[in-house]
Image (tube, rainbow, N blue to C red; front, side):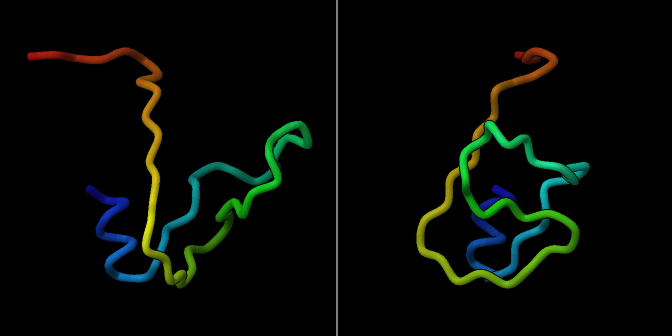
Length: 56
């Protein structure tokens, strides 16, 4: 939901605690430091459930 709101507002927050991107990672536009204004029509949010899932 947060990702959709960022897309609608045109402002994206940075990836927290990401200061140094591993050189083996893909060359994409990582948002580090401060958030920034971006105009886009498509977003993707990955959740790999680190720490497990709690199902009720």
